[in-house]
Image 1 (cartoon, rainbow, N blue to C red):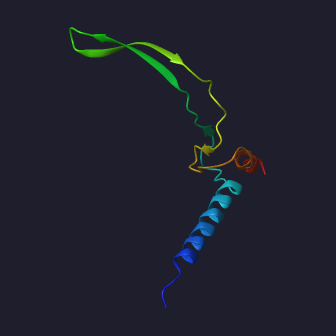
Image 2: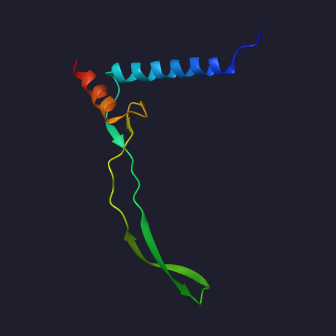
Image 3: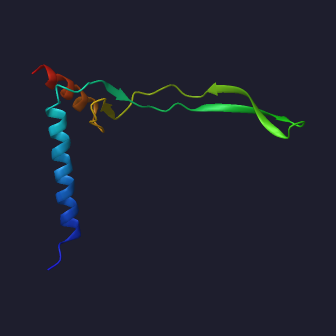
Length: 96
């Protein structure tokens, strides 16, 4: 009888979540640990048409929003996709 694809997916997800939790709770003391987060900021660009070269040339750049705090964090050791709480737990586990 063939395996149920949904059950296989659920088992894989459970396994990945367990590995992720273990990596957060048990950081490798030999690795470099530095928490990082990425956020995007939008800019508005203005262009002028250069008839001699038949091209657009950027003349201005204005930031249109402020950087927001990232929602997901990663560590230089390779652990990715952590919440702020998980990132704190990851670093705190180094001192335990």
